[in-house]
Amino acid sequence: MTLNKGSIVAQAEITVTPVTDKAGLKAFIDLAYRLNRSDPNWVPPLRGEVMEMLTPGKNPFHEHARMQLFLAHRGGEAVGRISAHIDELALAQPAEQGMGPGTGNWGLFEAADAEVAHALIEAAEAWLRGQGMTRVLAPLSLSIWEEPGLLTKGHDHPPTVMMGHNNAAYQGWIESDGYKQAKKLATYALDIRGEFPPLIKRIVQSGARNERIRIRPVELKHFDREARIICEILNDAWSDNWGFVPFTEAEIVHTGKKLRPLVREDLIMIAEYDGRPVAFMMTLPDLNEVIARIGGKLFPFGWARLLWWLRKPHGKTMRVPLMGVLKEYQSSRLASQLAFMMIETIRRHSTATYGFKRGEIGWILEDNQGMIAIADAIESSINREYTIYQKAL
Image (cartoon, rainbow, N blue to C red; front, top):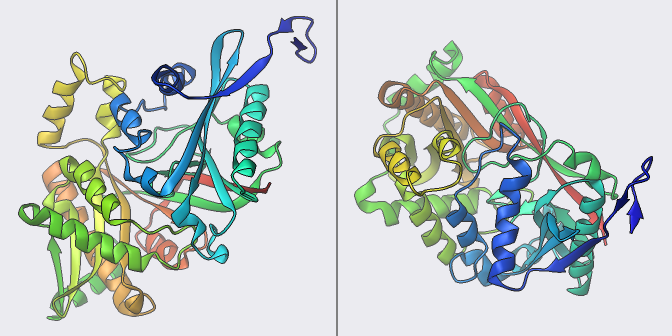
């Protein structure tokens, strides 16, 4: 038994145990819904999606990763959870790019209080040490491409699709365990109903007159080809970025299947230069706006609402989760011109066809000066910040 500071009420001991069966996995998933149900800005993910993410054989991340889930209990009640995982592809990256040899991760973190948080982090660190890791980079849930970082600014509004949200108290609990900032990520929001500044309009118009440039929508009838083009550009464009881990062939196929229901031809652009694909911009309708209304459950009525929405997405917000330009063009004026041309094309379609009013770009690394300059030029501003922490083990 332990005592709370300033209290004479005895509190049951916290136990942290690995998840080893289906019942434990279900409890692991269910806990997030219970601990966050009073937060009006938390968007409950679809339970089936979470189950798939955590199941080897259904999520290709597990083909190159090791993972252990942990649950914390107090007095017979689940009060916290955490995942500890090691990505072999991340271990193979250069250390100066953030990952590298000896770097493990934890994520999917939820805790009822600071004492539970400490016990969970301690268990994850012990597992990582046992696997030979010497450093931890966290939280990542599970991959850098899924929900990276802890939300440290922007708790007053819900996240957009594929972005995380967490209790604001987690920041203090994690930092009190010796974690220091490794990198900050940000999303940028803007009103897309009005036109961009005159300078941007002139850059776009100049590009439109250039016969070597073509901005085209993706073609759904050739979806597999288009997905491969986008992932090949992405792997090249981001390869020198901090935290980069390459997409595998299996992940390209898996991601294409997951995103296909959200894909609209006029919201994803590929830029060609002399007939060669050199850049892309992916825009997704904010699925979270409808997911929030069905509470993470497709049955009995959630599936009908979701399918109706997917037939023609509508709402307030669209998000640009990914864009990239081949490295050979990144230091040229062409790179920013292509970006502005794709942004303007998507902006027009988003407002005219779908009625979107707001755009969100990101995440963007705090030191990615090129992307920050583009975000500033279209008069967007930071609306959410995420922190990835590090600690020596």
